[in-house]
Length: 215
Image (cartoon, rainbow, N blue to C red; front, side, top):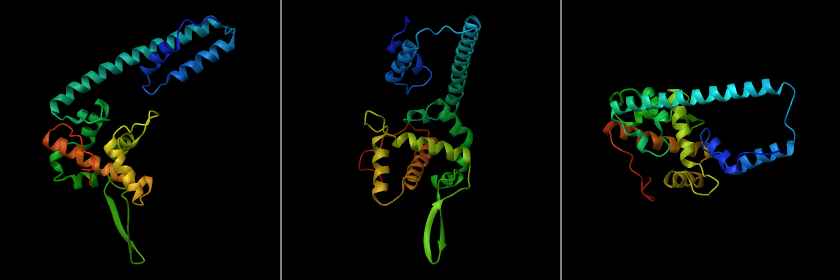
């Protein structure tokens, strides 16, 4: 079967939908098509019509989403927050953070924002021993946003370079101190709350921490 597209071209097409798409996946798809031989099936004209219709719908939705992003970006500028200057925070995440947090002035400090987001740990005693566990109260939507950001910050792509070296270093240090991965991730979330609070409170851009500066 004659294939009229290269692996590089197919990868570029996929990356418009999912940025994490790799070239080897495109090569696998093309190999499957090549090895399938004759791909003509019954009612092929109808199949082709439906496929083209689906593609047109997806392209239209992509244009619509791009337009929505542009309008959201315009609205974000009116708040004068610079959350998108922080790696990992795009227009969508920034708009959700602002929507869930609301007026940052209602939180006198980052600790109160952390409690509102359910990130601050809760202490309790059992048999005379103190212990901490994550709060299951608070705004779960906001909690989910900080969790998503924390995972993004500490992730290490296949190239071996952490998405955010400082946060990854802090995360690994907490694990070396005896915390579980989940507990270490909560520590990252708590630091992210501090960052977001400071940026919104002072309307400042993100300041990259220096290695060794983290507490």
